[in-house]
Length: 317
Image 1 (cartoon, rainbow, N blue to C red):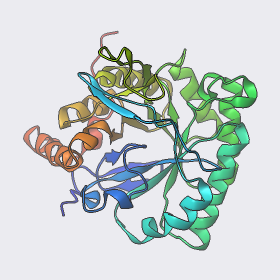
Image 2: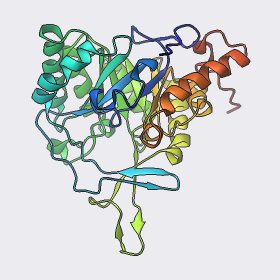
Image 3: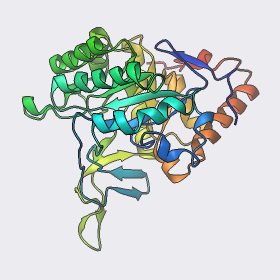
Image 4: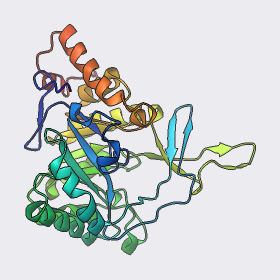
């Protein structure tokens, strides 16, 4: 096991991470499924797959397909629901990978549902699974079904209410995950910050369509899906740069990271943490390799502390 606690150690939202590399939501399940496949203890943290108030069956298969620029998926936020996560997954998270930060990804379809899930998980951490979770990530790209299906992140009042309600439900850090499709992602980040967020995650996937030309049908069972991987990286880096200029909160940069150079683009643009998703699905050793590459890059460039690089992009605009 290699932890790299020196050069790569970062502190974000009051939490110490042994390095800035985390597994992105939707790729790590709830941790246990990847134990023995990915060297979880070599990473800074992991973000679980979605947790919703009730179980969700998700989208029809096939749910995932690759294309030249990355991956497209339509999982439909499938998950067993908060009660099952509390019962079946938090005990493992409490006892395993003690040096790795654990962040639960939260979804809801009404403003109060995010807070309800956070409150139940927080109660479980306090009562029966101490150490299982360190923070929560609110996926505000979900549609607000009570407001005509507009995603929470695009409606400033709904976004603020989601964050405020969740803030009341926990003292643990709140990350707010934003879509790159928002009309003004910097404004949404500022609203989340004012409502009580501790960090911003950038970015969620972008909508896309990949067609099987022989069948003349979409490759995914749902039809459209979210694009991730290489094609998403420039979008995520730009969003990170925009939000860094608008808020002082730390940023978790996600999208298209498969090497140290990719991670450094996010860091220079303003991210303190970097998420790895699609690259891990293709190569389970990719996250730990990126940690090693970051250490080597810092050593060869005379960087004693990776935090010195955060937000140091030179931009003439």
